[in-house]
Amino acid sequence: MGKAKPRYCEICGAPIRGQGHRIRLEGAEILVCNRCYEKYGGKKPGTFSIMPTGRQPVRRAYSRPASRPRPPKPRTERPLYTEEIVEDYAERVYRAIQRSGKSYEELSHEIGLSMNDLRAIAHGYREPTIKEARKLEKYFKITLIEAEGGELLEKKTIPKDYEPTLGDIANIRIRKRKKK
Image 1: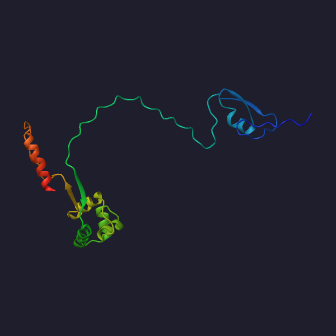
Image 2: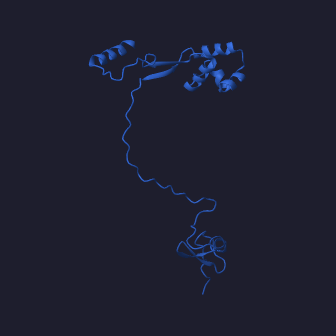
Image 3: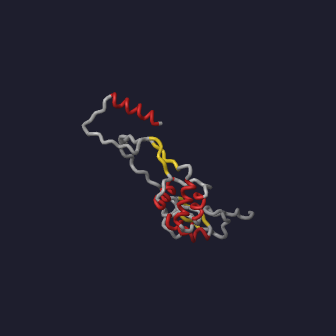
């Protein structure tokens, strides 16, 4: 008869030289080469699975049991207002820097902004974010943010037992329209 048909490892696919080894892997009996036998042969059956080398086994994410749906929280009415940076922010920041008599480097450490950001804002190349504007306002004691919209300054105290009438509500609406 002719030459025996070459056998291949059922894990890595390499041609098996010699007898080969039969191992039990995840409940199946398979024929493997010497290298795969060294890797998988000595382990207890069913304690490992075939994974490409160098990769961690996939971690399974367990889902939590569904909790009861929560009732929606009552929304508290807040006045609608937007915070905007004043138009002449660059001029205000630049003047404040000049008044301080400190270098951009010193100021950047004290305020908590980078030198480039501070310079860009002072020269008007970039508008500061609300967060940056707050830092500058606090440090230089200047105003850079203006609130537009709802009446934030006027807070009248109303007795707890007071119930507004329809007329009161109509007057409130009319007053709001006139202020715009």
